[in-house]
Length: 80
Image (cartoon, rainbow, N blue to C red; front, top):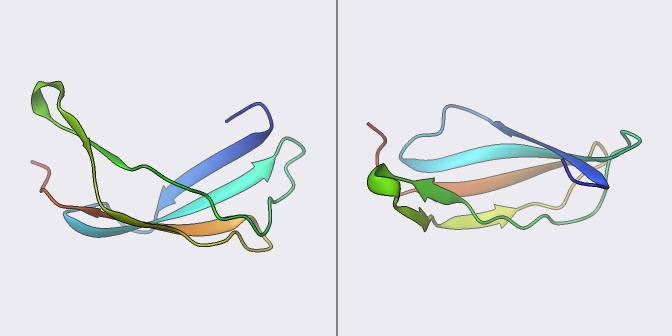
């Protein structure tokens, strides 16, 4: 949530090694859909010993009439 917008990120399936797709819903504070914008993302992998690094992604699609965008990232390492 931000001052002007609300964000809801939901995985389409359990994120695993490889391609993971997420639905991102964006609404304003009056709960109206935010339409025709392309969100940006910076997916990060949090690892043991407090190591952090980015992971490849193809970004997000433009939001539709419901404020939904589809975002894709690629997790290159398995989670144990």
